Image (cartoon, rainbow, N blue to C red; front, side):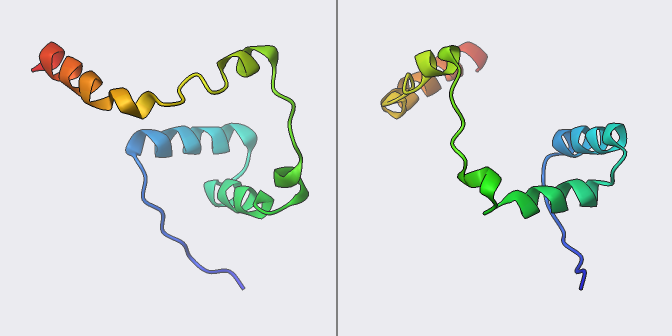
Length: 80
């Protein structure tokens, strides 16, 4: 049984998704269905080896939430 699903997302993301669907020769609905079909599959359970670059960056933002207020002030000073 097929059921209609409504998704809400940014216009920019929708345009990119539609363009990708066209390039791959599939419908946007099929892309979403394929993605949802992968959830919980063996592909999700497999561990992927990180590249050296990713390994070097892994954890670099740990504790970054402590600096949110100062970054917010910086952005306010810069743009307001």
